[in-house]
Length: 492
Image (cartoon, rainbow, N blue to C red; front, side, top):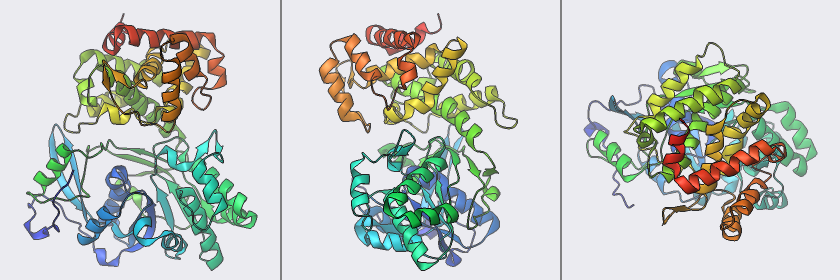
């Protein structure tokens, strides 16, 4: 979509639009954030903005992009690095301009070396990142040396293309200059994100320079975080919401999200940090219980609705919530199948948490597309569903909704919704397409080929006859009866 752009006229903005209350002239790039997508704008940078508003200071953010064009960064600079955050729900909508960003760097505009040099600057204390699961290049708990981009970066470590390669190159430069410790903090929605980031960075460094790897061990920390906010991809409709809130002006970097947000951060920083707790972040010693609660309960039910909702013609999560059967079965998935698998963090009431999630899912203003959530299933399923399935198999307890989700995914990746084709977005999409083409007409062979994907389905589950029999039955039920009837049958 082509959208006409003019610099924001702050004086002409509606009075209801909130502007930064702190002195932005003092900001220094103390955080470099890789991947300035929708979520980073609505969550990571927003928390820094609120921290500055509450506590002041000079903790500014340099945002870094590795892919695409630098056009949006140019527009951001024209607006003095301000951009619009719109929070919307069925109760109302509000807008504000966020001001924590003070610099931008883009590979296409500034080159790789400028980013490496930036990571080495003495005043920089944190490198944070939102690059999605694929960006960490970790497979089965170790650096994926079969990844073509990682192989290329290892051959040419001074001109890396991956986030991991860039970080290691920046740390090498930092060590060379004697510019001290730093923290690398993942803000992506995946379990043990700090641990996985540390594995990728350390193992890459060890293959490049053993002395550098030893320096990283002593001078770099990798805290884990749990992030939660529903931030749909921008659409024409959400852009119209931004324009309306700005009184007819357009901000190409604007973003629309729900009002709710949560950030739980492992308090493990080598070189200081902002006072994020002033913005509502929870600084804790152990993030894992919060991670698992969110991944299994929120994300697990999101995936359930994504596959089984999309196949039933429900385009958004709120459409699913408008269906009483889908809403009821989603609640049962959370409360009856996911809740028993969790160690509850602190004084959290998981039934109240589930009911809060259902209310968030019902937000009809967000238009969170089921197709969008259905992406990258081969990476999401193990952490969202399969560990819970393993628990129930051991306990001998019901997990029919989890299994139906797997059957829904196996139907979804056929890219055929009652004769309508659609694009599959997944790092294994070529392999999945090959399986569909080769075995799609033979149910037994098709399900067997998918279960043989060892990076998705662990060997112990595939060896469990109860699991494989249930998955075959779930696949057949969705294929024969349709997703809506398969979900309805869960109540029987």
